[in-house]
Amino acid sequence: MKLHSLLVISCALCLSAVQGIPTAYAQDQTGAGERDKIKATLLRPAGWVVDWSGPGGAGQAGLRYEAHGEKVVVEIELLVPPFLSCEREVTIIADGIKHDGCRDVDVTIHFDPNDPDIPFKGTSQRGYEYRFRAY
Image (tube, rainbow, N blue to C red; front, side, top):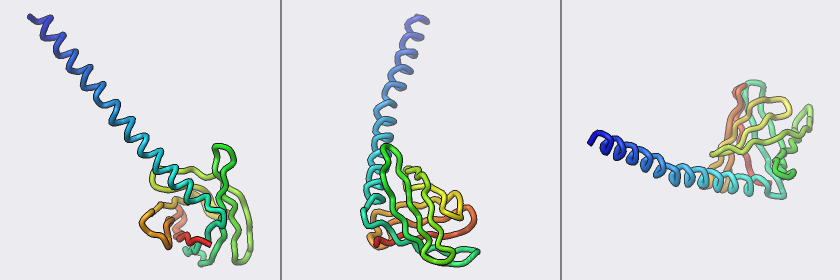
């Protein structure tokens, strides 16, 4: 009887572990779908005008995202002095993107598909705020 009870418990545990697999797989696929949508929106050919403000002032930058194989990179051009330009690698996360700026680090931008005017907004570690508008 004890052996039968152990077998029943073991089978129940195995089945409950297997039942969790489709849920986890579906969640991963949903995340991948959202990342694909973010990537497609970022890669618009005309690029983005970004209004930024923070402790050191405010200004604008032009950003253009490009796919380089599996990677996404951003070309950044400051539209105010000192008129810097740079290229940075982009990480697409579940709800947006992360990358460094020409002079700022650890910029996290969140994607809001329901805001057609400013679909990307975010902040950096140094306290700057970023708002993306389509060119």
